[in-house]
Length: 286
Image (spheres, rainbow, N blue to C red):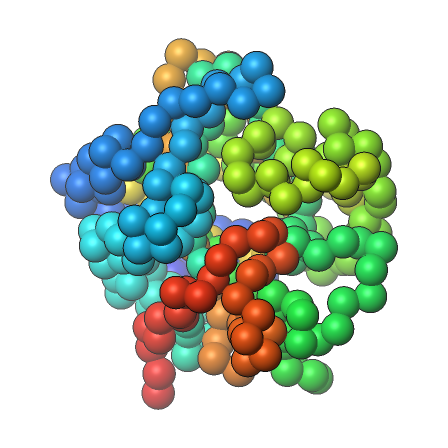
């Protein structure tokens, strides 16, 4: 019941994503909902309301890595109903290396088209040494960096569900410098992009959605969507009266180096976060 069919595997290979997939019951999701409610508050930034989260494990405000301090979230992201499906897509050994809360309040703007591979905090104009990158992939290997998007509340067309540009994972799109107000994350005014506030530009991709098949993917609470970081995706503004809440998690094989600059004693990542307490979690190994 919780394995991918051959049709679903081919769907992922052709389109770059698969879902929504029935995975968790509402009863299993409820403790995560309670954690989010108890560890957040509504604030106003740049005349826009948003939710602020405090991570007690890391010791600072962030939407990231709450699986370290929310046991119910950690158990969900480690659950075999997720991991076995990921293994079917070609990566037998997996590390859980990142999670992020996406809490889109009613009336909050959306996120523009992007490939997640380019949003680990490095400037598009700079030549980044391998030791300073977020991820260093082994050469001559086609590594899947997989994302699981878990719906905590229903994601609908009205409140800004995920949209995918089918097949874009097979293409590379040039990143372009634009004013900060025109960046893909210009409406996401939480700490995720606060590192850019002192910069004079942001970035978008040279991507024309009119040239691609675009598909919205609503998801009910407890369902997951699996996609590769390489596929173009976005989510529009929340035009409903209810928040849209989801958590994404990223999985890679152990052959990928994560935050290699830690080996030099540098514990600040590309977005300015302290990662001294961070560690990856091994989920499966032959």
